[in-house]
Length: 433
Image (cartoon, rainbow, N blue to C red; front, top):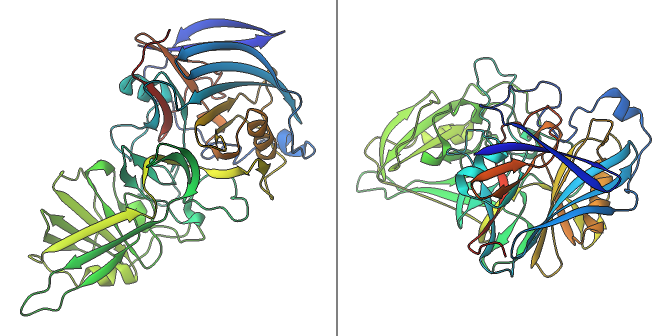
């Protein structure tokens, strides 16, 4: 069961009321892109720049499980008062782990409360920016995230080119490949996950073996001149969006040179000049190419035996995309100091044993929100050494679970939860004591 638990903090007291959760996904908003102040209103942009929040004051605290604490806080930003929420996670707690919240398919959206309820998370926040809207005629938005996803040690998707992502402009030196996650040693880290892959044929007596680079995995956009793979995890949404836009211009036209190859149980079964749609069987991989990548794929023939390999440069148990805003305890240079808005962020401690999951309300008299630069200072104040900015605006949400009920603890700026691409979940095998 899901509930929306609306909390208003006043004079250090949390006053809560319960309202019904939305029965279905909220309508797609048209005002702020994929959230996080991508298109802040004129009033927010007219405010002076600010790179630091005021004094932080915690107003409530509750233990959700051993090693998992939920806290509310107040502070101030350039726009006025700020109300926020912190999930403090000690990864050394008994049975505590952090993982990916996700819908049944990559190209699908659900609210954070729906995902947390389905996966039985004790707490969770929204995750990466995503393909929320489309300008290409006849091409539906996929709802899939911009950055990498790793779940249970398994790569689910790679990052789109920087110019194809949604959200605010990237700070200098950052990339759509940047993630926050848990590495193979169980430590929380902020790192860049670069996808590498290859498509190989075994050739034969009559044909020379073919080896093609693979530069995408279940992405709504693949680099110009390349090829990418789509698996059953993608879902049924059209793969056409993958060949639209360019590496520097998201709204550029779709390419006129595209190809799609279907590989079932390691054998090519079809080669087409149109990129298709529909669910992909578990024993099948669909390869999509554009420009040179399309020409390369046309070298394959039905009946060819093909092996498709891909991996990230580093091994992670869990990872989700987000752009860095704090490194070694210092805010990055070039963070946007204007446009306070609702925000979501995730931080990690220096030793990788703790995570700080933060949501800030915004666009209301009770809480104006924060700028990206202010958000970095806030993460520093709550103990993070490195941190990333996640999707914000109407996407910002934090939930906790009691028994069989999952509660939305913040005040979503759309008036209800927005369906999003993914999130960060906190899980525990131990009961709360």
